[in-house]
Amino acid sequence: MQQISASDFIEENLKTIFAYSLSKVSDKTDAEDLTNEIVLAILKSAGRIKNPNAFYGYVWKIASNTCCKFIRRKTRVSFCEINSDISDGYDFTEELFAHEDISNLRREIALLSKEYRECTVAYYYDGLSCSDISDKLNISLEMVKYYLFKTRKILKEGICMEREFGEKSFKPEPFEFHTIFSEKCNSEYCSLFARKLPGQILMSAYYAPISIRELSVELGVASVYLEDEIMLLEKYNLISKVSSGKYQTKLVIFTDDYMKELYGKAEKSAVSAMAEILKSVKGKLLKIREINDICGKLSDSRILWAVLWPVMRLGYGKMKDEYSELNERITLYSGASGINYGVSGSGQREELECGTFAGYSGIDENYYASAADFGILPKNNRYFFSMDYAALKDKIYNTVSGKIIPEFMILTKTEEELLFKLLSAESLMMSKLYRELFLLACQIMYMHAPKRVYDVDRIVFQTLFFQTLGFIGYCAVKSGELRLPDFDGAAAVYIRENTEEEENAVSQEILI
View 1 (cartoon, rainbow, N blue to C red):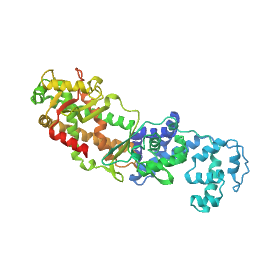
View 2: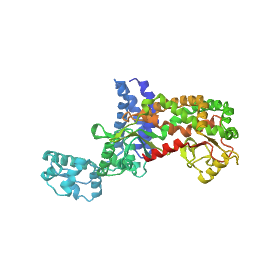
View 3: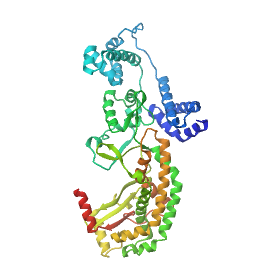
View 4: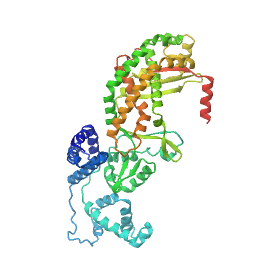
């Protein structure tokens, strides 16, 4: 691997390296120092790589090794005043248990891995003999003696070490787990992330493998409690055991840094694309007004906002047809398929988000709404934010009867189909924008996510529509071809009549 390739990697991944450093040390200054050391180590070692395919795994191994050395160097070790003439055959643990600083001993035992901890507790706390422990744990007598011998060495090194819990022990990182199911789900799976600990485990093990002992210090949680959590995460293929007894996350996690980079790199082309799409729609305003009398009475602004959402839906639908293989869901566990992903971070600016959206949102037995609450819209122009069903129904029926001036489109099924046909060219233009966003998003995610995570293309593809809704609405306004509403009430919405066939279909779907 050439030096210039390592330089490119560092330039593109500097934020990720710093995030990894910050996850390992609680102090920002230390994180900056660690980042510098990792960068230097990568540059020094890059020339040794013979196989380019091993580059990413190799540099993250360098990062992990550098981190371990850095933490060892920062850790101040002062040995307790215990007999300095202890021989290798001396049972150091007996003296530790008699030592007045019992809290540190308990801390070190809490950090032991399962085999070491179970033998130690059985021998020193429960008073069992090595033979009894062998029978109880169903392991050989020699293994019991080995575990106890190794434990003495581990405790001797750690008993008086000053340990500093990671920042996640008192300040958990924001983390949300999302699952899109195609089949049935079980309650255990759905409740995995109803508490903070599983998410913090996945975040801690995301950028590089980590042992249960290291996790215990990072999260301030004893190993005995982490083991059950990791077992569940392994069961559902969200984390896996790698070399040297360490674990690494397999879940794609959308971080703030990833989203900011995606929006930053995509904004210029997305604004340009939305300008062309909206210009094209403006050229069809006369034909859109001819759809029915209600459309004929709407202002340009109301029509443009009303059609933005269906253009996006139609465009994404066309793009999905091009990548049919990525539409398929994967097996999550026996009896269920879908996709999983995580979201971590404080969130993006409100104008880049989209709070609520629906292609079909029932109003009553006669009408439904298709709407999106783009974050760029003022709150009084968001459909779901300020929805009053009683007032909305009155407006719909009074509009249809001609008693009031229309505030939004009201279409029959046939009229909706005509609108979609009129917007066919714009939908194709939108599908091209989605295709560009997808390719860019994959490129960025491959730079942010560790290689161990699975199905990056599929996860990015199936979440792209949801993650870019607000961003596209923002770009539409920034293009200058669509202005913020100068009217009150919902903007990005149209109302459509239900047909008898559709009502029956919905009823059947509910019954099934």
